[in-house]
Image (cartoon, rainbow, N blue to C red):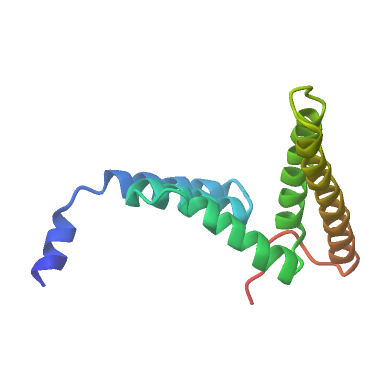
Length: 138
């Protein structure tokens, strides 16, 4: 009981701010994925647990994207993989890499190209199945 009374007496500035941000995002019609990620970022900062928001994002992409075939997380992942591929290709062009390092970089390029094709196929199937890009709560 005393613990609950202590919690009630605590200032709620930070918590109130994130609560208002969540409601504002919902009223603004933002994606549930963005709302969840926003809360995860806030929790990461409040808890001092680096990497928590990234963990949540990765989990959403794995479960809602690949497993449940929601389009939005797969499109987000596709965008990230394409950006990484561009950076890897740019690195490949640098003359300071040895031939052995370039072989490893070419291998990474091949894997990224295959992953992009896989994601595009998954997105096409999800769109053909009429799945929405949003979380639908039953």
